[in-house]
Amino acid sequence: MVDDDPPNNDLIRLWLSGIPAPAVDSVPALSLAAARRELARASFDAVILDRILGDGDGVELLRSIRSNKETRDLPVLILSGRKAEHEVISGLRNGADDYLAKPCTMEMFRARLFAALRLNRTDGRPALLGRPGLQLDAADGRLFIDGRVEHLERKEAEILAIFLRRPGVIHSAAFIHETVWGQGESPRNTLESRLCTLRRKLGDRASRLETIRGCGYRLLP
Image 1 (cartoon, rainbow, N blue to C red):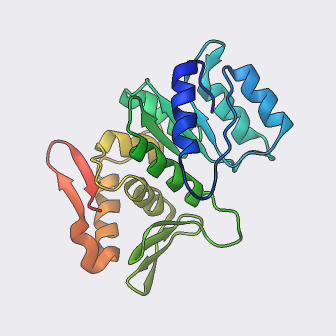
Image 2 (spheres, one colour; image 1 turned 135 degrees about the vertical axis):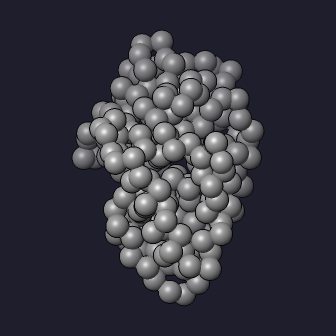
């Protein structure tokens, strides 16, 4: 738990300690330097990372985690008061598995943490996003829909993964473009074309992928 605000750190650790099974043992780090020492000292199942720290931006630690072969697959959930869209995009583009804005509820925090852990499962089985009836293997683009399998192109899989990680949340076209294609220009109708293909591959479940006029897109839970 990387956060330089002791009360907030203690609160999150309390939320973690209340998880009945499996038991969670959390380690506090009140600075980037302390977090680096802990990561060098031991292995961890996940990192809860604030961005506003006394000795720098948490994204600095995120970059070093992703650049180190020993930790590059470590689940990282950013929990930060920086919640502007460009801040969220920056965190996700630098390798965060999810980005949760403060303040949040205990239930939301736990749900997002468990989702990040499932996404990074390393027991040899594919990490599937979604729930029974609609699941995506983000590693190879296989989409499992009610017993049948569709194969998604890489960009299609990246777009669908955004929706599956946060079902019910409306994502703007600008956010999806930035997350999937980066800052480079892409054809004006690229996103619409990919969404059209996704809906075709979703078949009977295509109605769950909604266009919210003037706001963006969402996948119904």
